[in-house]
Length: 248
Image 1 (spheres, rainbow, N blue to C red):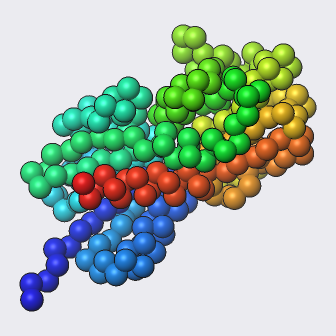
Image 2: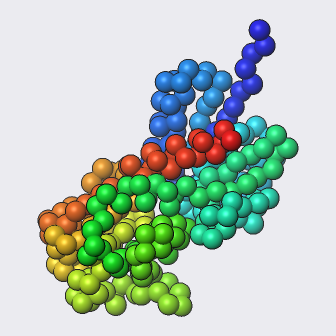
Protein backbone atom coordinates (compact mmCIF):
# COMPACT_ATOMS: atom_id res chain seq x y z
CA UNK A 1 0.00 0.00 0.00
CA UNK A 2 1.37 3.40 -1.04
CA UNK A 3 1.90 5.89 1.80
CA UNK A 4 -0.50 8.84 1.76
CA UNK A 5 0.86 12.09 0.37
CA UNK A 6 1.80 14.48 3.18
CA UNK A 7 -0.41 17.57 3.27
CA UNK A 8 0.73 20.73 5.02
CA UNK A 9 -1.76 23.48 5.81
CA UNK A 10 -1.01 26.60 7.78
CA UNK A 11 -1.53 30.18 8.87
CA UNK A 12 0.41 33.21 7.66
CA UNK A 13 0.50 36.40 9.69
CA UNK A 14 2.77 38.39 11.98
CA UNK A 15 3.29 37.61 15.69
CA UNK A 16 0.80 34.74 15.52
CA UNK A 17 1.91 32.53 18.40
CA UNK A 18 -1.41 33.40 20.12
CA UNK A 19 -3.44 31.89 17.28
CA UNK A 20 -5.94 29.11 17.95
CA UNK A 21 -5.95 27.85 14.34
CA UNK A 22 -3.05 25.40 14.68
CA UNK A 23 -4.60 23.79 17.77
CA UNK A 24 -8.03 23.68 16.11
CA UNK A 25 -6.86 21.96 12.93
CA UNK A 26 -4.45 19.63 14.72
CA UNK A 27 -7.38 18.35 16.84
CA UNK A 28 -9.52 18.05 13.72
CA UNK A 29 -6.89 15.96 11.93
CA UNK A 30 -6.62 13.60 14.91
CA UNK A 31 -10.42 13.24 15.08
CA UNK A 32 -10.62 12.48 11.35
CA UNK A 33 -7.55 10.19 11.56
CA UNK A 34 -5.77 12.23 8.89
CA UNK A 35 -2.25 11.21 9.88
CA UNK A 36 -0.80 12.69 6.69
CA UNK A 37 -2.10 16.22 7.47
CA UNK A 38 -0.39 18.87 9.59
CA UNK A 39 -1.07 22.55 10.28
CA UNK A 40 1.76 25.00 10.92
CA UNK A 41 2.18 28.67 11.81
CA UNK A 42 4.24 30.67 9.31
CA UNK A 43 5.18 33.90 11.07
CA UNK A 44 6.22 36.37 8.37
CA UNK A 45 7.99 39.62 9.26
CA UNK A 46 7.10 41.01 5.83
CA UNK A 47 4.61 39.89 3.18
CA UNK A 48 7.43 39.45 0.64
CA UNK A 49 8.58 36.41 2.66
CA UNK A 50 5.45 34.69 1.33
CA UNK A 51 7.10 34.33 -2.09
CA UNK A 52 9.90 32.24 -0.58
CA UNK A 53 7.43 30.13 1.39
CA UNK A 54 5.22 29.34 -1.59
CA UNK A 55 8.19 28.48 -3.84
CA UNK A 56 8.92 25.51 -1.57
CA UNK A 57 5.85 23.90 -3.15
CA UNK A 58 4.95 21.99 0.02
CA UNK A 59 1.61 23.56 0.95
CA UNK A 60 -1.97 22.36 0.42
CA UNK A 61 -3.84 25.39 1.80
CA UNK A 62 -3.40 28.48 3.94
CA UNK A 63 -5.27 30.82 6.24
CA UNK A 64 -4.28 34.49 6.38
CA UNK A 65 -4.48 36.78 9.41
CA UNK A 66 -3.35 40.24 10.57
CA UNK A 67 -1.69 42.15 8.95
CA UNK A 68 -1.70 40.47 5.52
CA UNK A 69 -5.36 40.01 4.55
CA UNK A 70 -5.13 42.84 2.01
CA UNK A 71 -1.45 42.85 1.04
CA UNK A 72 -1.58 39.15 0.10
CA UNK A 73 -3.94 39.86 -2.82
CA UNK A 74 -1.35 40.97 -5.44
CA UNK A 75 0.59 37.75 -4.77
CA UNK A 76 -2.35 35.50 -5.69
CA UNK A 77 -3.33 34.19 -9.12
CA UNK A 78 -7.08 34.71 -8.74
CA UNK A 79 -9.86 35.67 -6.31
CA UNK A 80 -13.25 34.19 -5.49
CA UNK A 81 -16.06 36.66 -6.23
CA UNK A 82 -16.81 37.33 -2.53
CA UNK A 83 -13.14 37.97 -1.72
CA UNK A 84 -12.97 40.33 -4.69
CA UNK A 85 -16.00 42.27 -3.44
CA UNK A 86 -14.59 42.45 0.10
CA UNK A 87 -11.02 43.31 -0.88
CA UNK A 88 -9.51 40.99 1.73
CA UNK A 89 -8.51 37.31 1.85
CA UNK A 90 -8.29 34.94 4.80
CA UNK A 91 -8.15 31.60 2.94
CA UNK A 92 -5.91 30.45 0.07
CA UNK A 93 -6.56 27.35 -2.02
CA UNK A 94 -3.43 25.91 -3.65
CA UNK A 95 -3.98 23.64 -6.64
CA UNK A 96 -1.76 20.90 -8.06
CA UNK A 97 0.01 23.45 -10.28
CA UNK A 98 0.79 25.62 -7.21
CA UNK A 99 -1.68 28.26 -8.39
CA UNK A 100 -3.16 30.37 -5.61
CA UNK A 101 -6.82 31.39 -5.32
CA UNK A 102 -8.01 33.71 -2.55
CA UNK A 103 -11.26 33.37 -0.62
CA UNK A 104 -12.89 35.12 2.33
CA UNK A 105 -14.65 33.01 4.96
CA UNK A 106 -14.50 35.67 7.71
CA UNK A 107 -17.78 37.23 6.61
CA UNK A 108 -19.56 33.85 6.80
CA UNK A 109 -18.19 33.19 10.28
CA UNK A 110 -19.32 36.60 11.48
CA UNK A 111 -22.82 36.28 10.00
CA UNK A 112 -23.41 32.87 11.56
CA UNK A 113 -22.16 34.13 14.94
CA UNK A 114 -24.29 37.27 15.15
CA UNK A 115 -27.50 36.60 13.24
CA UNK A 116 -29.44 34.95 16.08
CA UNK A 117 -28.91 38.09 18.19
CA UNK A 118 -30.15 40.56 15.56
CA UNK A 119 -33.48 42.27 16.29
CA UNK A 120 -35.48 44.87 14.34
CA UNK A 121 -33.89 47.68 16.37
CA UNK A 122 -30.44 46.72 15.08
CA UNK A 123 -30.25 48.88 11.96
CA UNK A 124 -26.82 50.54 12.25
CA UNK A 125 -23.35 49.43 13.29
CA UNK A 126 -20.02 50.96 14.25
CA UNK A 127 -16.93 49.00 13.19
CA UNK A 128 -13.76 49.74 15.15
CA UNK A 129 -10.72 49.35 12.90
CA UNK A 130 -10.16 49.69 9.17
CA UNK A 131 -8.09 46.60 8.26
CA UNK A 132 -8.94 43.53 6.22
CA UNK A 133 -11.19 42.05 8.90
CA UNK A 134 -13.37 45.17 8.97
CA UNK A 135 -13.95 44.88 5.21
CA UNK A 136 -15.41 41.40 5.70
CA UNK A 137 -17.69 42.70 8.46
CA UNK A 138 -18.98 45.56 6.28
CA UNK A 139 -19.77 43.00 3.56
CA UNK A 140 -21.55 40.68 6.02
CA UNK A 141 -23.69 43.49 7.44
CA UNK A 142 -24.68 44.63 3.95
CA UNK A 143 -26.07 41.14 3.33
CA UNK A 144 -28.51 41.59 6.23
CA UNK A 145 -29.32 45.23 5.38
CA UNK A 146 -27.45 46.82 8.28
CA UNK A 147 -25.58 50.02 7.49
CA UNK A 148 -22.15 50.49 9.05
CA UNK A 149 -19.59 53.20 9.76
CA UNK A 150 -15.89 52.47 10.15
CA UNK A 151 -13.95 54.14 12.95
CA UNK A 152 -10.28 54.56 12.11
CA UNK A 153 -7.14 56.05 13.64
CA UNK A 154 -6.04 56.95 10.12
CA UNK A 155 -7.41 59.80 8.06
CA UNK A 156 -9.14 57.56 5.55
CA UNK A 157 -11.77 59.39 3.53
CA UNK A 158 -15.24 58.84 4.92
CA UNK A 159 -14.15 57.11 8.13
CA UNK A 160 -15.11 58.34 11.57
CA UNK A 161 -12.31 59.16 14.01
CA UNK A 162 -12.36 57.92 17.59
CA UNK A 163 -12.83 61.49 18.81
CA UNK A 164 -16.03 61.66 16.70
CA UNK A 165 -17.71 59.01 18.85
CA UNK A 166 -20.04 61.12 20.95
CA UNK A 167 -23.05 59.95 22.95
CA UNK A 168 -25.46 60.45 20.03
CA UNK A 169 -23.45 58.24 17.64
CA UNK A 170 -22.93 55.44 20.17
CA UNK A 171 -26.55 55.48 21.34
CA UNK A 172 -27.92 55.36 17.78
CA UNK A 173 -25.66 52.53 16.55
CA UNK A 174 -26.80 49.42 18.40
CA UNK A 175 -24.08 47.12 17.07
CA UNK A 176 -20.41 47.78 17.89
CA UNK A 177 -17.75 45.47 16.48
CA UNK A 178 -14.10 45.50 17.51
CA UNK A 179 -11.93 44.61 14.51
CA UNK A 180 -8.74 45.97 16.07
CA UNK A 181 -6.15 43.74 17.79
CA UNK A 182 -6.48 45.80 21.00
CA UNK A 183 -6.91 43.43 23.93
CA UNK A 184 -5.39 40.34 22.28
CA UNK A 185 -3.25 38.17 24.56
CA UNK A 186 -0.79 39.10 26.05
CA UNK A 187 -1.94 42.77 25.92
CA UNK A 188 -5.13 42.01 27.79
CA UNK A 189 -5.43 45.40 29.51
CA UNK A 190 -5.86 47.26 26.22
CA UNK A 191 -9.20 48.16 24.65
CA UNK A 192 -10.57 50.61 22.07
CA UNK A 193 -11.02 54.13 23.40
CA UNK A 194 -14.77 54.66 23.06
CA UNK A 195 -17.43 56.16 25.40
CA UNK A 196 -18.54 52.94 27.10
CA UNK A 197 -20.90 54.92 29.34
CA UNK A 198 -23.25 55.32 26.36
CA UNK A 199 -23.56 51.58 25.76
CA UNK A 200 -26.76 49.97 27.05
CA UNK A 201 -28.77 46.75 27.06
CA UNK A 202 -29.92 47.70 23.54
CA UNK A 203 -26.43 47.07 22.16
CA UNK A 204 -24.73 44.02 20.68
CA UNK A 205 -20.97 44.29 21.21
CA UNK A 206 -18.89 41.83 19.20
CA UNK A 207 -15.14 41.34 19.54
CA UNK A 208 -13.37 39.41 16.80
CA UNK A 209 -10.69 38.53 19.36
CA UNK A 210 -11.01 35.06 20.95
CA UNK A 211 -7.87 35.01 23.12
CA UNK A 212 -8.64 35.94 25.88
CA UNK A 213 -12.17 34.59 25.96
CA UNK A 214 -13.44 37.88 27.42
CA UNK A 215 -11.52 41.01 26.42
CA UNK A 216 -11.50 44.29 28.30
CA UNK A 217 -13.72 45.67 25.52
CA UNK A 218 -16.32 42.95 26.20
CA UNK A 219 -16.04 43.35 29.98
CA UNK A 220 -16.69 47.08 29.67
CA UNK A 221 -19.72 46.46 27.45
CA UNK A 222 -21.02 43.68 29.69
CA UNK A 223 -21.00 46.09 32.65
CA UNK A 224 -23.37 48.26 30.62
CA UNK A 225 -25.73 45.26 30.14
CA UNK A 226 -24.98 44.86 26.43
CA UNK A 227 -25.15 41.48 24.66
CA UNK A 228 -21.50 40.47 24.22
CA UNK A 229 -20.01 37.97 21.74
CA UNK A 230 -16.38 36.95 21.30
CA UNK A 231 -14.71 35.71 18.13
CA UNK A 232 -14.45 31.99 18.95
CA UNK A 233 -17.54 30.79 17.06
CA UNK A 234 -16.58 33.02 14.12
CA UNK A 235 -13.12 31.44 14.09
CA UNK A 236 -14.53 27.91 14.16
CA UNK A 237 -17.02 28.58 11.35
CA UNK A 238 -14.50 30.29 9.09
CA UNK A 239 -12.04 27.45 9.76
CA UNK A 240 -14.61 24.84 8.69
CA UNK A 241 -15.42 26.88 5.58
CA UNK A 242 -11.68 27.01 4.80
CA UNK A 243 -11.46 23.23 5.13
CA UNK A 244 -14.32 22.84 2.63
CA UNK A 245 -12.53 25.14 0.16
CA UNK A 246 -9.22 23.26 0.46
CA UNK A 247 -11.07 20.03 -0.32
CA UNK A 248 -13.15 21.24 -3.27
